[in-house]
Amino acid sequence: MDVYEAVTSRRAVRGFTDREVPKEALQRVVSAAAWTPSASNLQPWHAYVLTGEPLSELKKHVRERIAAGEPWDEPEYVQYPATLKSPYRERRSEFGAQRYGSLGIAREDWEARQRAATANWECFGAPVALFCYIDRDLGPAQWSDVGMFLQTVMLLLRAEGLHSCAQMAWAKYRTSVAEILSPPDELLLFCGMSIGYEDLTISHPRTGRARLEETVSFVGS
Image 1: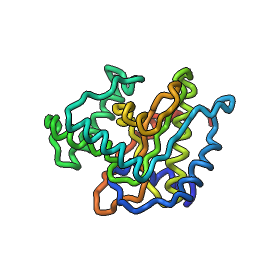
Image 2 (image 1 turned 90 degrees about the horizontal axis):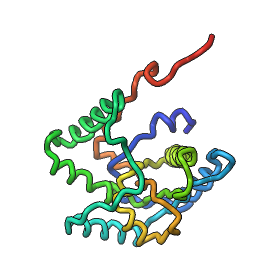
Image 3 (image 1 turned 45 degrees about the horizontal axis):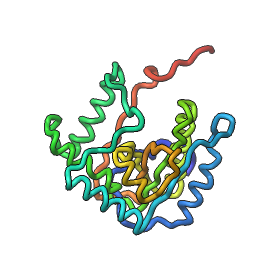
């Protein structure tokens, strides 16, 4: 698979089979992703790859919290501005309409939307989860480096025939994740990522992209 195919075939898959992912494939991916560029070579990411019984225990813990009606953990970073301006507001709205529309959930059915959201914390059935942390003392430039690391991981997973779904939703249960992983106090959980083989029996509508002229300007001849 060439890099163009990896980029265009990568998407957020929200339905996986329970087929085991070879540990060797995961090791190849994270080893190669270590070559992700970062400013001054800080390499500000720290990833945990979780499988088997520890992942099952994490899912069980979060499931129990949801059933008990426990609130989400206090956020440690702002995921979205309080008010999104145009065109970002419209893009987010279009995504929501497509995502929940594909599930037959009406926009105003908040309870059904919440139930659908709980699939995040089941990793959409995936047998592997990656949790990506960053040192809380680092700044915006290092956060962008972490984003490049995550993108590199997702593209390398495609080369292995695997799919993924990056999930900031895991930050809402960061304390549960920490109980399983025991990360150092200086690390902040940015996101999780579900990894596995796509369940082809589930429809995954592809989210569109803005027209090129909306996001890119060519200057010069």
